[in-house]
Each structure stands twice: as structure tokens, then as C-alpha cells.
Image 1 (cartoon, rainbow, N blue to C red):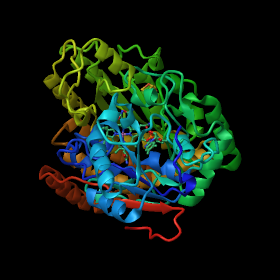
Image 2: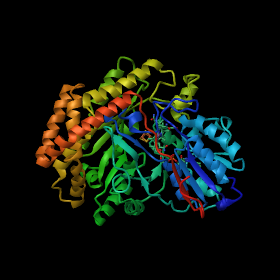
Image 3: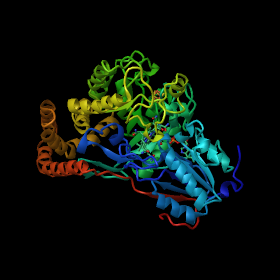
Image 4: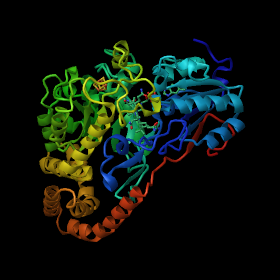
Amino acid sequence: MQRHPKGKRARVLLTSVFGPYAQDDEFGSRAINPMELYQNQVTRAQGAFSLRMFHRSWGIMMIQANISAPCTLLDFPTRRDLARELESGDYDVVGISSIIVNVGKVREMCRMVRELSPQSAIVVGGHVAAIPGIENMLDADHIVRGEGIAWMRSYLGEDETAPIRHPAIVSALGSRMMGVKLPDGPGTTAATIIPSVGCPMGCNFCTTSAFFGGKGKFVNFYETGDELFAVMCKVEKELQAKAFFMMDENFLLHRERAMRLLERMKAAGKSWALSVFASANAIRKYTMQELVELGVSWLWMGLESPQSSYAKLQGADTRLLTHDLREHGIRVLGSTIVGLEHHTPENVIGEIEHAVAHGTDFHQFMLYTPVPGTPLYQQMQEQGRMLEGVDLADVHGQFKFNFQHARISREDSKRFLDWAFWRDFEANGPSVYRICRTMLQGWKRYKDYPDARVRERFHREMKKLGSAYNAALWVMEREFAKVNEKVSRDIHGLRREVEKEFGMASRVVANTLGPALLWTTRREQRRLAAGATYEPPVILERTNWESRPQLA
Ligand code: B12
Ligand code: SF4
């Protein structure tokens, strides 16, 4: 591979794609595809009860933390921010990180670099690099497919096999719900830990798996439970974090690593909470006690479809599994695909109802989408079923099919998808209510558990349930009566249980804080109806510079 002539003296700018994001524009921003996770693909039908938050661009944060060259990281810039940095910076290398939907922005950013910083070499990385023929779509010097830390280290003449340094990453920023901004920052938000990239299960539609090698392959940043424990201790100290978002596509699949982590947590008395992604086959390798002791408190699981033949689901009764997990206080985010090959206008409703009947705390619905770089895309291309003229900015699984489905039309794909979100909300109520129910179940089961770490974790969560969350229940009970009377009564029942458990104080909080929260919720509903959107803040961070200010 070619090295940059200046090696580690090269000055590097790493940037995510520019905003604003929550609008329709010629560069590929889409109003229905803001820079948010829950609002985009999980709670989008839940109005003011939707969970709103932003996540930093972790890929380039990891790269920045692992090179010794002077480096500036620009996250969520506007074009003006980018232009200012390019004009003032004298950068030798500009690295742009993007996913496929944002390829139009990458093209424009390359154009800007050539114009404003012609001496810079342009490196494009992240999932956008999976587009076949991307070299001809934009003007870059290097297109990097797969893992980027090793690539950048090698490009700058550094040791690509050196241990990975993990930056302290606050998992979310700008969180809000029911019209209220939630506390952010050290001590209040989980820290993100990235143990690996890729997933060896190799489901045919999965871009993350395909991008890092596909079936049987993945890249581990931390091989052992001991390494992971050390990283988590360091981040715990830096961010005062007790909760961790494990950004690993299938964290529980690596049982040996997870069990060693548990041993170390036990020995050190760590009462950590872990949010993880895991497939059903991986979850079943553990007893509920092991999961609870490991601190698993939130779990993202692909349910896909009862008729699908994915190896990760083989033999799993996902409804029973979801029920058990929630009984043990583990909040479940289920993920279902709409528009699989066997779906028809007749059976898809039944499959959505089946998904809804899981009664998960959150439910993501995604359209079956052949994304460039995946086995599914290749198969559809070979069969001549990819639709012509679909803008890549619209290929994000939340709009319409980008391929010819055997039985469902492109227009209907959107109708079924939108209905799935609505149906889950209507039948199961706001996700905030559902997580309160799961938390209470966990508390009842584990409040007297012999392991003090586990008791402490549930106790921490319960403080919120007995106070602010109970006020939220008070609001939801009132507001949801208009949508589903039965769910509203269930919310009332849960509130009574919480008050029985936590006494007079929680009732007082509900009655005093509740009306204020009702007011902010209704104000938020009006704001959203009038078209209000949210954008992440622009962030600029410099490392290894001797004399440059932190903020532009
Ligand atoms: C966090 C996240 C987000 C955040 C984005 C935060 C941000 N600042 O960009 C949020 C929640 C907002 C989000 C939204 C969406 N996301 Co998203 N997201 C993720 C997630 C879960 C983690 C990303 C991550 O940090 N991974 C860990 C890091 C270390 O890996 P990485 O980013 O891939 O980076 C590595 C390499 O790619 C490479 N690299 C990355 N950048 C660069 C740059 C250079 C210069 C170089 C050399 C290398 C390099 O090196 C890194 C280290 O190895 C991934 C799934 C996943 N497991 O990766 C999906 C994922 C990236 N998202 C995806 C999608 C589709 C979306 C949405 C369209 C979904 C939707 N319908 O709502 C929206 C788009 C929003 C928008 N307007 O752009 C897809 C991308 C598919 C594709 N092929 O393009 C993924 C892969 C999920 C999936 N499997 O479908 N997302
Ligand atoms: S189990 Fe999940 S992360 Fe792994 S390949 Fe399948 S869809 Fe992707």
C-alpha cells in the first residue's frame, strides 16, 4: 500500500459528512432520515414519546485515537465549517467517513477539498466504500474498504499491529423525550465500547458483516475478557460511567470473552450495566443468571421473521425468549424485516402482528433491502431485480423497496412498513412505559439477590423509576387513553405497582412533576406537527497539535 510521503508528520483532518441532515436536499439529506437512531427506525411513530438522541462518529474517533499524527476531527460540520477548516488548516490528508446513503455528500466534500485544499490527499472510508465503482462517482485518492485503523496507521508509516487505544466515548448526546432535554455527559450517559467490527454470522442482507469480510469473518480489537475489562476500567474512570453500550454486532457470540469479563467484574465488585447486540442463538448460550450477573440490561435482537431460515434464529422461540428476558429485567429491542422473499400482501400483516405480539420494549422495523456490497445485492443483480433510477440516498430501509419484490409493490412496501410502526405503538404503548414495566419486573426479582453488584445495579435503575419515570407514566396514562384505552389502564396499573413498591414519595412526584411533563409533552407534539426537527451539534477535536485552538 502507498504511504504518505510525510508519514506521521502529515497533518490529518477526519470528518463525517456535512449537515443539516433532517431535510430534503440535492446532496442526499432526507427529512425522514435525520442523524438519529430511535427516531429513524425504532420509535418513529411514537410522537413526543419518541426517544431522540445523537451518536458521534465512532469510526473516525477510533482512528484519531490510534494515530500519532496531528489530527483534527470534525463531526457533523456544515459545509461552511468544513470550508473554514480546509482554508485554514493546511491539511496533508483529509479522511472522509460515510455510509452509502450519504455518497452525494462525499462527492461534494471531495470537490470542496480539491478546490480549497488542493495539496491534500483525499481518503474515503466507511461503508460508502462498498459501492461498486465508487472510484468513478467521486474524486478521491484512496478508497478504503473494511477496517480503517490499521489502514491509516500503515498509510502514515505507523505500526499497524500496535494495540488499539480506546477513546472515552459518551454513547449519546442531545437526548430528549416528551419535550424535555435529558441530562448528558459524564456520569449520566453510558460509555460506548467497541470490542470488534463485523459479524461472522453472515446473514445475506447484512452490510456490517459483509463489509468486514462476511461469513466467518470479523475484526476483534480486544480478543480477551481481560483486555476488555482493562479498557472498561479506564473508560469508567474517565467518564464516571457505570453503564456501557457495547458496540459489537454480536457481543454474546464470543462466550469465552464475555464469561472472562464476568469473572473480572465479580472479582472487582463492578456493578456495571451493559447494552448489547446479540443474536438469539448467541443469547441461548447463557443462563438468565449469567446474563443478569454480566450486567446485561438492554439487548438488541434480530427477530426478522418466523419463516426465515437465518442460522442465528434456528430453533429459537423468540416470543418465549423475549418474555423471559423481560421477566429478568432485560429490556429488549426486537428487530423485524418487512418484505422478505416469502412475504405477500396477504401474509405480511400476520407476520407484523406476530412481531408486535413479542411485546418488546422497542421494535425496529426495516425493509428487506439489498445494499451494495452484500450477498443479497449480488443475488438481486444477477437476477436483474434491482430497480433502475433509485437514488442511493433513499436506500436506507425506511422508505420504499429498491428491488423488484415477487408479490409486494414498491408503494405498498412503504405502507406496510409505516403500518408496522403504528401497530406496535398502538398495541404495546410508548416504549418508555414498556421499559418501566421491564425495570419493575427485574427489580422485584433481583432486589434481594445474593450478589451485591446485581442488587446495586437494579437499585440504581429503580431510583429513576420511583421518581421521574413515574411522572412519565402519569402523563402516558392520560395521553394514551386517546389511542388505546386498555393500554392506558395497564399504564395506570403499573403506576400503582410502582407506588406500592416505592411509597408516598413516588406518588407525590407523579402528581407534582406529572402536570409539568404533560405540558412539555403537548408542546412537543405541537412543535413536531409544525415540522420541528433536531440536528446534532458541530464538534471539533484536535489531537497531537502543538499550537491550534480546540474549537473553530
Ligand atoms: C452509530 C450508527 C449510526 C448513527 C450515526 C452516527 C454518526 N455520527 O454517523 C446513527 C444512529 C445516527 C445512524 C443512522 C443511520 N444509519 Co447507522 N449505524 C451506526 C452503527 C450502529 C455503528 C457505527 C459505528 O460506529 N461502528 C463502529 C465503527 C468502529 O465502525 P465503522 O463506523 O464501520 O468504522 C470503521 C470502518 O468502516 C472504517 N472507517 C470508517 N470511517 C472511515 C474513514 C476513513 C477515512 C477511513 C480510512 C476508514 C473509515 O474504519 C473504522 C474502524 O475500523 C452501524 C452498525 C455498525 N455495527 O457499525 C450502523 C450503520 C453504519 N448505519 C447504517 C444505516 C443504514 C443508517 C441509516 C440510514 C439507518 C436509518 N434508516 O435510519 C441512518 C443514516 C443517518 C444519516 N442521515 O446519515 C448502516 C450502513 C449501511 C451502509 N452499507 O451504508 C449500518 C452499517 C447498519 C447496518 N448494518 O445496516 N447510524
Ligand atoms: S447476526 Fe446480525 S449482525 Fe450478524 S450477520 Fe446477521 S444481521 Fe448481521
